[in-house]
Length: 199
Image (cartoon, rainbow, N blue to C red; front, side):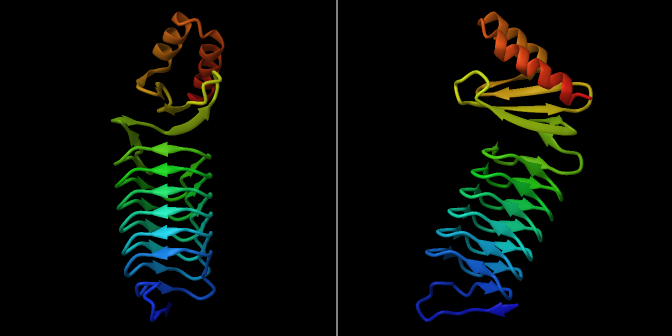
């Protein structure tokens, strides 16, 4: 791995593998390390002691907290944001504008769509759990009711849990609440998704 130093202090003694590429106005924290052929878009920002495996790819305007760690071949869309101490296994893939709270951890081959949001201390991988609920499948959807808000759907193969705004409960509870509020389309669509994901 090549170690790049700069008289102006721009790189803060960061280490870069061969053929690494960074867009304009990127900022690097002290002792950041990047594997060979890593690629980052313009205006990316990296906290100190961040580590990235070989062939990692991140879109423009990505921001990384201190001590973030990413396995090789990780891929994240533009505008992704990562809190301090985030850790991701190899081949993790996330869509654009994903947001991760501090101390989030994801196992190898984790895949999430665009605009996914994860609170601090979220953990995914073997034996995944979210808010104390151990799950096997996860998906997110947005703008079902025209409000633009995102919902998260988790399944352990028997029970399906829903997070939508301040709501956290079973799919049945969510659909009943939506029907009581006259949101029949919302209830029907989420109910259908719940039946599909539980299989």
